[in-house]
Image (cartoon, rainbow, N blue to C red):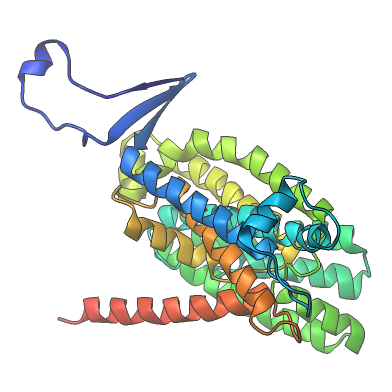
Length: 367
């Protein structure tokens, strides 16, 4: 791997031309040449450190009447220097914190992909129905087919994929606009919400309560074994995203511009659709549909990063900070009496963000 600064050479060096900002470097990994913004990279590093700090603090927070652990004490537990009760407290919270960190990054990457190819801040897997489709698949598995946890997880993945294919076929096939894609997705999402309500209302009370709790997005009962599919999913999907990211950037100026630069628009859209669904599905299948992280994180990343467009690495870091923070709030705000599903907190934050976004858009539309 080599890092170099792009500068003109040869006869063209004497001709004034546009130059990359001084903070820009190009990283060559094998046949790939990736553009690196040093300022964005520094922001992402700070966000990753912040996510780790919040995660360690969250590990030591007690949700019972037992005393909480200090930050230093939690680090000693992680280093194996303390055992007993403190170690049990950390072990109980560790799966949820790990899933919150990697799951928040996965949801943010999914949102960044869809917001880039649709050029719409509402392009998010929870808004356009993909996570709702995963919930539909899980409900059918739990309430109709009576599958176990593994079967429900697989059906959630299938439901999300089928929803994505339907939305793509109706809203994006033939190179139609991202606006239509989002509108079709919102319509599909509304129909799936109604169908999910019917499934829950027609089930017995115990199964309906369990299914409804899963549908809120909950990390409370996450086990360490549940973290493996999420981590493995990211290990598989991230390299594909790195390869296709340069072509994805071409969509920031529209599909016509991307096609004029030699991008196979239809094929690239399908690949990005599968990647976006995959990032959202790996966490949704484990923890349920966690709303608004995929919607909010890419937009926050775009606002704090000096680079144009939606930065993928910064988006992932923001998503990790957002979800691990929301998980800590959900577990502790009403403790020890109640532990809220993390989806309650993310929905509250996302609702405020969405209201602010609509107000800002309405002001821009005024003459």
